[in-house]
Image (cartoon, rainbow, N blue to C red; front, side, top):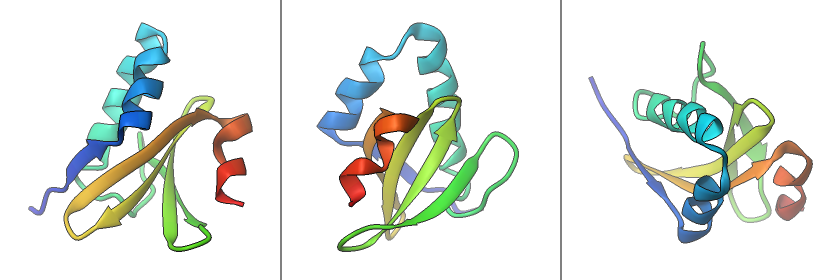
Length: 92
């Protein structure tokens, strides 16, 4: 089975650390699901493809938060972890 590597940008890591412990655990679990397949929606991995200005992004929904990421070869690069209200503004 093919597995992907999941990396967080400095911004995403800072945003992850700002989450409360319970949400950090849920987000960590969700990000681990991306190792299996970062493209397909399934239980515990609510994934959606987004149209970005320069490339296609994906989002992982975990409660009220969204992890925005791109996939390059076998690496999932998480750019941001934001509340839903702010998650899509920066894509415009």
